[in-house]
Length: 159
Picture (cartoon, rainbow, N blue to C red):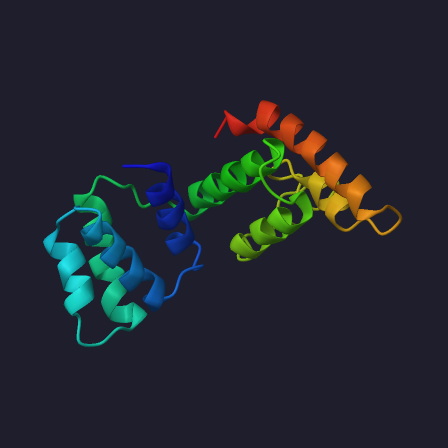
């Protein structure tokens, strides 16, 4: 099991992949030499609809030792992934945060907050920076990197 498999599994749980993504994933796994009847069943399915492919994907993931997380854990996987990339300076921070918000769009950033949107998962400062309109993109990106490093230290290891 590798990190990309866990991210794919989390995106599946969050409803962020399509039936085409599932077929491409199965094809890639087979091409990499990860033989599985479940992957073959995905490729060979006559109907390439989520209702058909999703159960096959879950079997394939289980057979490969890739956990299918619960919804909340899938959110934390995506938070760690995206915010970790920002903290490491590997990506455009504002663009990556936008991708994060897209990936977790079904998660309620308002539920259970104490004061600010996103404080239920520790991203209220990042969220505020992302929507900042009195700073340049350079300033926002710099602060997003700084706050992402803080988030990784405070939350990245807890979940």
